[in-house]
Length: 50
Image 1 (cartoon, rainbow, N blue to C red):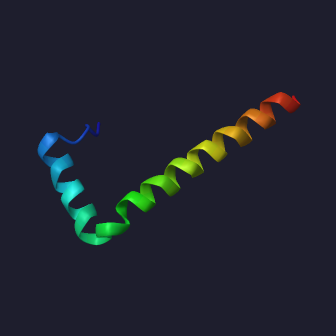
Image 2: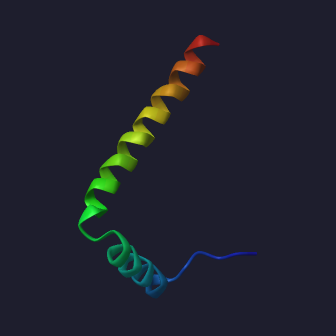
Image 3: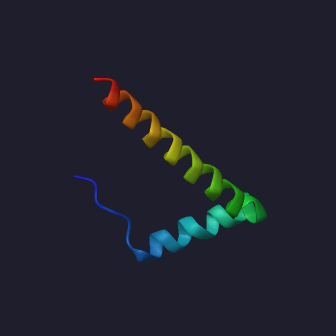
């Protein structure tokens, strides 16, 4: 059964993310947040139609 990565693994993942995305990382975070909000709105609309 797979397990969650440890603290050291998360640090490594964060460093790799910074290397690949650099200054665009905050922009990607905002985009991801907006996408999640829109997805939740869509789910709520679907449930209200039922």
